[in-house]
Length: 340
Image (cartoon, rainbow, N blue to C red; front, side):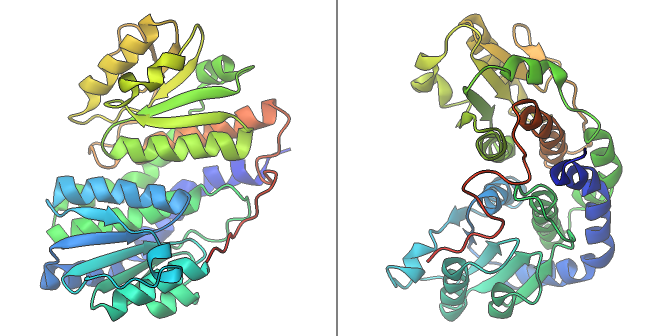
């Protein structure tokens, strides 16, 4: 029997196509507003998988535009009621439901402080959408599995296209509009080598660098959510500073490498960890000691990570089922979590 999570992973290419068909006009308008404002910095507001989207967009903004982006804890507004000086900033708020009171309150505080605010949400009628200056409907369609998959990808695509429109980057625009075909191929890859290595283990590492670090964070969360595996995400620049000490024989490690300037450095660390006895997998053909995983390249370093997470989702759903867990209904979790 097919899980809802599996069905929604397979829907991702069509979901992204729908976003690009129905949402581009609003995204272009948002990009123009950013270009007209010329904000000195960006602020993100999000939690959970949406916060990993924000981390991805942080790297994209800094690499593409040279504009720094910082994550602000929603509790600054909702619990501490501390005003922030945001009159020269733009605030990007990511929430698939647009419901959580703390997220909405931080968005309201940012707008009150004079920031240009954007809601990336799957519900254009939500309280968040009513609060922000611009609403970017991610057009993911209903997502019934508790584990976010297509809403994560569509949020990332919407945010990335917003940045591309702000800069007027035609190469990135073209790569984004070619994503549905690439993601369709990525959804058919589910890494049986990695699935077999994870079997019987309750702890592992995921690694990334730059935009790929955001994908590593999302992968670690999904291992916890859907498989009850204690997964920790690290930048490959950090893992050798202490965390590597717990690595032993057969310790599973997944290194998510895009075809970008960080690929060689990430692969070097993956190879080093493999020499310490770990079972290391890396999405690169440059590895010497780590096991090479097949992956889909998208023709642009900023869109490569999105193909990687789609293949990861296809893989982790199968790991959950192999462990006798229904990934649609993880224990202790519900689809919408509202925090103050």
